[in-house]
Length: 108
Image 1: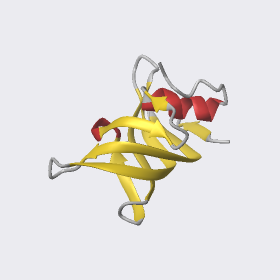
Image 2: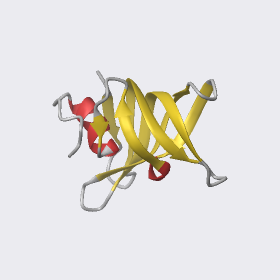
Image 3: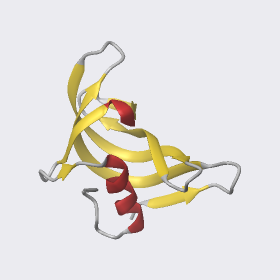
């Protein structure tokens, strides 16, 4: 099961590891080109905002297109689906749902 770690106050970073899920998504590269990626996501990092909400910034995993480990900026990710065809409308909520084991992975 995915695990979530939140550092003590004053160091509001968030690290979700052991995700190990395949996702397919469109990614806007720094060259402004969009490519469709199949990624086995292993880790996500971000921060906890002052209001307590968690904002993920990066996902890390194995990119099957590039055939290597890559880091993807969440703000450049769109049109996310699982390999089972489940539409992921809110990537942060989906990942946190995995970490919490609550089954609410689609993030409405």
